[in-house]
Length: 362
Image 1: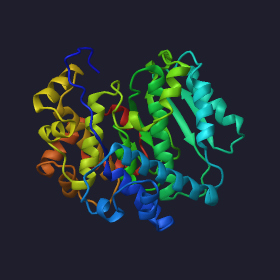
Image 2: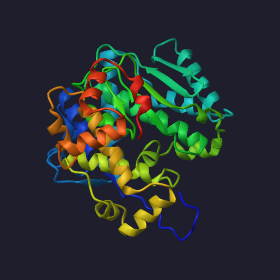
Image 3: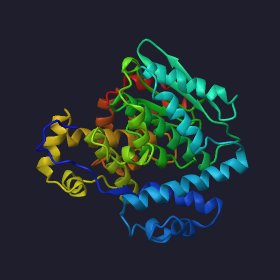
Image 4: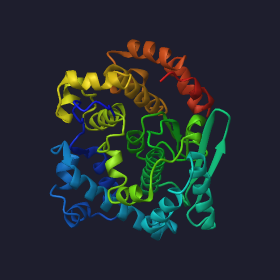
């Protein structure tokens, strides 16, 4: 973040409980043993305590242990129900291939070749390079959409975003993420992983970003990679690395607090999570060229765009869930953000028109 030595290193000491609850819910459905999984992972909380909100945040070690255990259980389930999944050994091999690349373009081309090397057994990774934007099509082998496969696919997409950004030494800001999953999967899990519009019911799983990143050089060494793999992706995901923008850390916290409490936290509440004053938090955000209110608006907007694809929710209800004062305030803000009313945007989503997303102003 900042280069000034006097600046406090703002970093949350806890992991988002909502992510673990969502994964444990899924584990419960496929195996019925979430408490045993937590005990075996050395996590001293019960599934019921986490789900009922009696534990707002868990320590980083417990978060990492629970997340890894859930991922392993979900991958084991998919291995038996849908065939081969990428193993940790294969992921490490991919990382070792990427560390020798010159820039992000070569990283992406090499990733595509890596997937091709397995003849489709792990799915496909297809880049499409345009003059202004890059679209990555990430298609694992799936035999029908399930919550388990969605969680693994969403988590895997987030891992690639973090890995690519780490290789070039800067956050890879996505313009949008799309999933070929219906609205009845655990969409809140996916929305909480990304600070950009997330769409469902799309033809492919994709992530899209600005083409300007392609020429960014790889700045990491093999020694750096060895250290990264000990805790990847959790250090990056939870903001323990100093290079992750504070704004992105705050966005992730806001989404996870909202998932638990249906309320977005105030600047003072977020500052307490980081263990700093509200003034320090605002100053650090100003150094990044943003502010708390801008992050809050982005969070509200992304929550609202996700909710607008659910036809059973009225505009009034979406305004309430997204923490607007009333439906009229929501309509005015959305018109300013998206250049169209919430109802018009909902019709475009239903019609499959995602080109309009390029006009979004956040």
